[in-house]
Picture 1: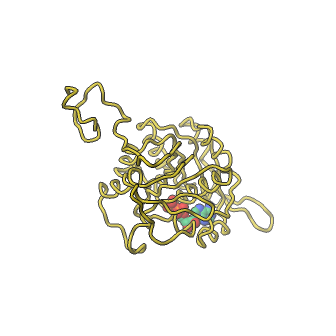
Picture 2: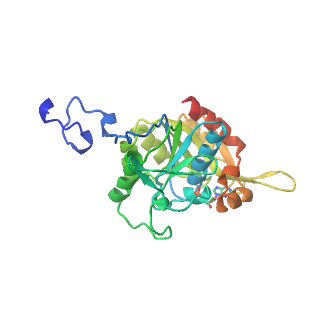
Length: 275
Ligand code: ADP
C-alpha cells in the first residue's frame, strides 16, 4: 500500500504490506491513562477460580505498595466488583470513564459498574463483548497504574483472541482446576498464548487439594496433580497450587477479598513484577 493511502490502522486493513506489525492492531490507551504493565489471567473454562486469582494478584501487589488495577474482561460473568465489595455506578469525567476504587486502593472497571441492573444477563454477541473490553482500555482513565490484571473471558475462542489482539498484554497466568489438567483445555490456552507471542508466566492449579482442619493433612480430592507434567511439557517454569478453602469462599462472598492471603501466589507475583 502506498504511504499516502495508509490509514495506519492495520486492525481494519486487509493489506499485507511491509509496515504491518502485530503491535499496530493494539487499541490506543486513553491519553490520560498510565499503565506500566499488563498481565492477563486466562482459563480454559469458567468456574475454575480465574477471577479469584486475578483479584488476589491485585490485592497482593497493592500490599507490596504497587498501584494495581483490574480490567474485568469477563463480560458475561463479571464477579470482580462483588468480591471487592465495590458497587454502584462508575463515574465519568471529561477525560473518560473513571474506575471504581476498592477500600485498599485497587482501581477496577467492570461491566457490573456501568450496567443499570447487575443481575441482567449479557446476551451480546462476541464482537459487542470484545468492543466493550476495548473501551475499558481506550475510554477509562487509569491513573498511574504500575500493574494491571485482566480477568480474561474464559476459553480460547473469538472473544479472548480479540482482546489479546487489542490490548498489549505482557504475560499471562493460566488458572486451571485439577480436572482440566487431565484434558486438553489447558494446552489450548498455552497454544493460544504461543500463537500471540505472549509468554506464559505461571500455571496455577486451583482447588488443588483440601487441608483437613483437624490434622492438617492434604487431601487430594481429585487425585494426584498433573500440573508439573503439563508445565514441563510446555516449558512453563513456575507453578502454584491453591487449596479449596471455605474461608476464601466466604471472604470473597462477603466482598472482602482484600483480606485473603494465599501464600503460594507470592512467587507468582514476584515473577510477574520481575517480568
Ligand atoms: P472463574 O473466574 O474461573 O469463573 P471464580 O474465581 O469466580 O471462577 O470462582 C468461582 C467460585 O468458586 C467463586 O465463588 C469463588 O469464590 C470460589 N472459589 C474459587 N476458588 C476457590 C478456592 N480455592 N476455595 C474456595 N472457593 C473458591
